[in-house]
Image (cartoon, rainbow, N blue to C red; front, side, top):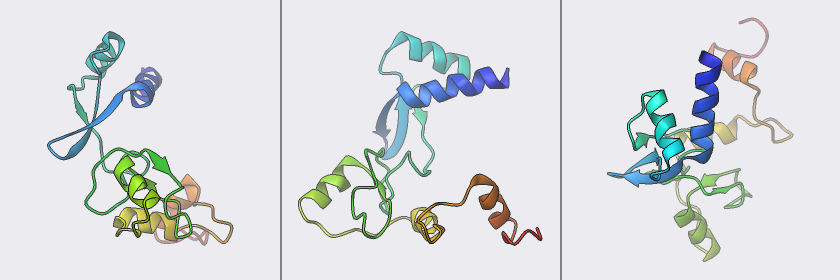
Length: 134
């Protein structure tokens, strides 16, 4: 049953509509019956809150808009995931705003080749190191 739930949740994250409610990001059904049924099966309210995590919410400090641009804006300083407003700001020549701590930590964790740690390496990092002793 957990595989089925994970699959349904994955489809909702892929096909659900993004928006902002009360200044916070949400995913909603857009009144599409298949999504309404999926939300009901998952036990989610419509709209459903979106956590402030990489790839879902803009990397700019104070912004809770959904991501629409990945890796293009201010790419010389990192692979930033930003909303349409901040992407447009870059296009009209605005400087890079302050980025959220989680985004800076993500970019600082890249290796010499620019790769992020694998999930197993991240787990080891969270447990105190990746030297194989933990």
